[in-house]
Amino acid sequence: MEEDLLQDLRVFAAAVDGHDVRVSLYGGRHNVCGAVRFTFPDAGDRRRQVARLTRWMAEGTLVSLLAYGEVLSLFSETDVLHRALERRPA
Image 1 (cartoon, one colour):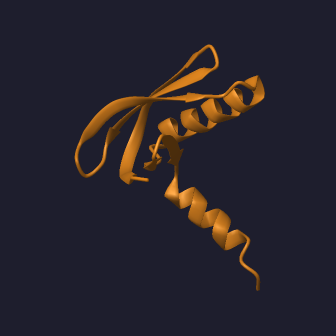
Image 2 (cartoon, helix red, strand yellow):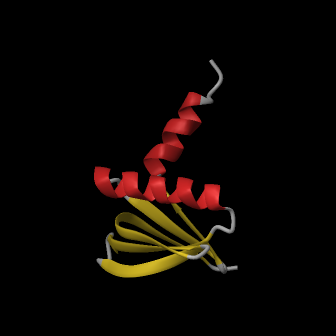
Image 3 (cartoon, rainbow, N blue to C red):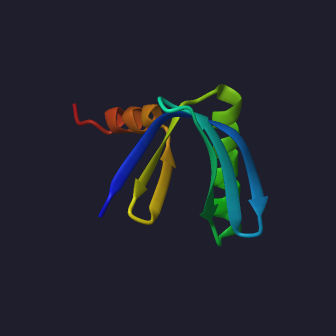
């Protein structure tokens, strides 16, 4: 299974189209510009994801796009690190 990671991307736009959320991204080391589509059949999940994308866009949060085979994940490495450190045992 092939794995690719694009880092330091910014969210340019997020639009809902039925069960899908289309996310436009740009930036990174290779100056990428493109869009990805994520499917969220549950309306609540879709709203939460769009709210997160909107926050990232407004705050200028850098995000990473991980392609693992046919599975795509978009995430903020900073958010992941903060959550990991909050759960660290004393």
